[in-house]
Amino acid sequence: MSPELASRHFAALGSTCELLSLGTGQAALERCEAQVREAEARFTRFLPDSELARLNAGDGRYLPVSAEMFAMLEAALWAFAESDGLVNAAVLPAVLSAGYDRPFRLGLSQPADPVAIQLPPLPTVLLLDAATRSAALAPGAALDLGGIAKGALADLLIDELGDNAVCNLGGDLRVRGSGPEGDGWHIGLCDGSAVALTQGAVCTSGTTRRRWGQSAHHLIDPRSGLPAKTDLGEVSVVTDSALRGEVYAKCAMLLGADAGVAFLEAKGVPFAAVPAVGSGNRALGAAA
Amino acid sequence: MSSNATLRWASMLGTLVLALGFGGVVATSPKPAQAPLHPAVRLLPNDATIQSKSYVS
Image 1 (cartoon, rainbow over the protein chains, first blue to last red):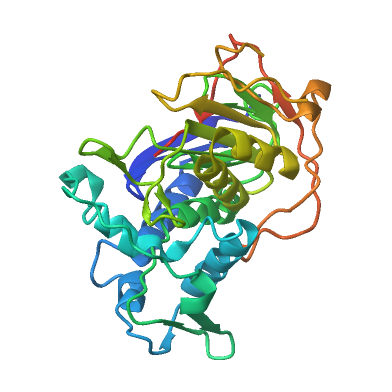
Image 2 (image 1 turned 90 degrees about the vertical axis):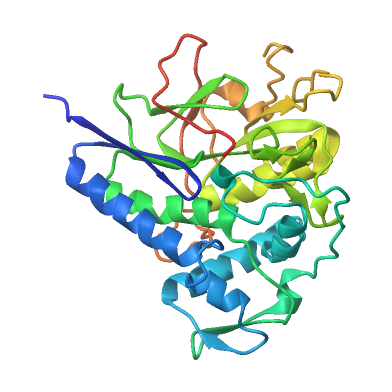
């Protein structure tokens, strides 16, 4: 008798989450959902009493942080280094300047004259002290852990779902096991294609959603301090971990079609890409 | 791959089985570990059943 497929869908992390598991039952999915919600309360920038909000308001003082926050801040520093600074969690001042100052579902307005915010390199404004498990953020700096948190959480929470499961947190998903058909879980990518995989992650970044005003969107280019101008609309990346996938997909988006494809090829990861509307819709060509 | 789909894959997908030569399972820290793992990745036909989807959120 085949194990029963359990599924659970819920809104969290500003998006839709989907948990799938074969053989563990609903209880495991409910425990995982509870952990997602706990993480959301910790890492959100929209609740003034969240741990992230307290850190952002720390004004340069070292503050004790939870083990979960410390690990996430380490992940943010890793992402900065891995992306040569393209994935910079210290992006929040630019996100706010672009008008993303409240949960997206409440509606945003684009400033008439968006101001480019010069963003500091994350390692220059975020200091961690492992001995005391504390963190200090330079005055004026502020973190947005949104994308990094989704990827890192998917990597962590897949363990809650057993040996044959999918943890999909707002499109950043981690996969493990042979899936319902025995050949791996079938995962759709941004261009409508699909892959089967038994281990790994699939993550997508893009500018096609979370748009407001005439041209504002949530993907900030830390080099300009403004919403990214890119000829890519969406990129899906297949990697070993969702955190890495989140970082690589965002890098490709920010680099644009030519440099982004070269970046992903250099990393040796499979990917799918869709051009931005109005970019000429040119084909990206086949990989060598 | 069709150009309409603007799909680009690293060339190793042509072999159907891809060994991702980096990283590892994250167990206790969000930072990807460096131990290699070798997940199998296959490109599915257009009419394949999809169980989940990666998307922009």
